[in-house]
Image (cartoon, rainbow, N blue to C red; front, side, top):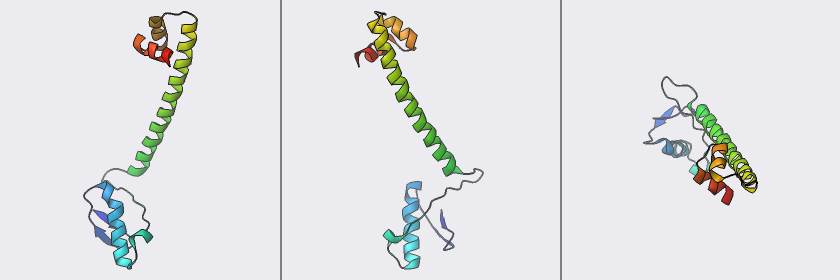
Length: 111
């Protein structure tokens, strides 16, 4: 169910991805305006849960931070693997040092 509190009206959406459009259509119809002129802010309320959107945004931020850290770890791994290889450390030992398979160590050296 989609509730537009400013109009004290309800509409329906089958999926969360449809909520914004359905609300915009309802508001445009009620105000005799164009859909493109209507801005909405979607909040999600689930019985028993608080701040669903806020938690989802936090999860996205954490995922983004994790991706950045993973990219940094890969770059550092490539650098150390290259340095160890130049020092004639065997690929299998490089894998052990980095905590990766020897195949992955070989890939890191090859990049």
